[in-house]
Length: 208
Length: 208
DNA sequence: TTTTGCATTAACAAAATTGTTAAACAAAAT
DNA sequence: ATTTTGTTTAACAATTTTGTTAATGCAAAA
Image 1 (cartoon, each protein chain N blue to C red):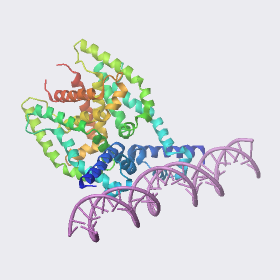
Image 2: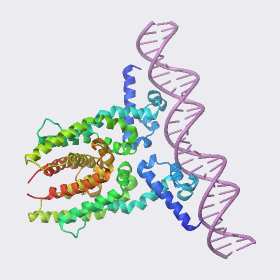
Image 3: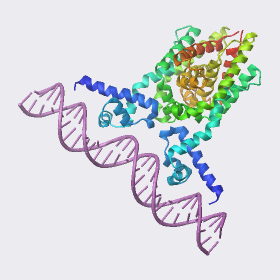
Image 4: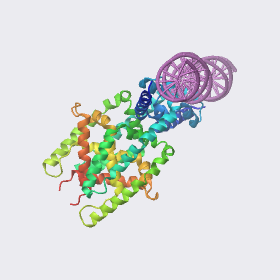
């Protein structure tokens, strides 16, 4: 067995475990299932990661950067003009969430019930306050010039987060409920959502 | 022990169990914990409900009507004029979700991973298709008369659901991230959200 | 080639969780 | 008063899940 094989085996466990944890939550995940699906004995899993908790921690800290981005990117690129910034922010945030659809659900099911476990994530997010203040300033200035409506960034932020994340989490659910004859598939639905969200947010800040 | 006491004890277990299941999910919930918090031996819990599964099923079927309402009420009262219908629908839906904040998270963590367990809920929701078609007709007519923009009800529905549910689920999370010095408490935040959502949706269908 | 160190396996141990039972008990019915 | 019915408790059994260990293999370094 080469070093490469080892890396691959460890990596394989991590990938399988990520899917397992993200879909079933910490409590629902089974180390035996993970081991089985990764094609290793469950003793191997314990050999590499010692405990279920440590395997979990490893996955979370590996995902940390992505989680931060997932929150931050809503606020967009401070260099762009306001409306562009909004469009680009919504769009890139949507894509990021859509590319990692299991993560938001996991955050909701794991972080919310165990906030103490994830304190370090909140700490890291000082960046968000800078972008927040910055965006509020841009908005206030534009509003001063009568270009847009004055709006609260926290409301804007929450709306974008809601409109981007919720449909991605629950697309299946919504389509099953009111999808007509399944002709509208998930990909089309989400593409439509992305445009809808951009349109709604633009309208929200537009002054008439 | 009177019949009343029994009812109370059984009821107490149900109440405690509901909170336990809704916060920790089926896998995270512990029958011992439930029994302990309800002040009964865990044998009692099994005496009344036989298995963890049966206790769970009981809670779900008891909540069934509420779950249906939580989806249906978004579409509002078909008797009212369109804008009123929208305002009233958003408002009552928001209140319903806010009064049962654990339920949406639970639906996301339980229904989405186990759609087969909840097939009967989808079946029940033929009502929603009636309201859906009905609302689309109202909108199309109003749009025909040039009163509002033509919009797709599924988009409208999804937006309202997103804007109402997501902030309620994740208020804590959002406030911790960008809440300034905790001066904005959860109640104020949610009250602001409710107004914001109504305003956004009205703007969405308004024609200029 | 021998040693060294990590990788692997199989069997086992421990802990946590759920589920059962028999016997005691209490209340209501006869 | 006695029977019947349902409730409660304590002890225990079963199962599931996690974690450990000792023996073995195997590849590369010494």
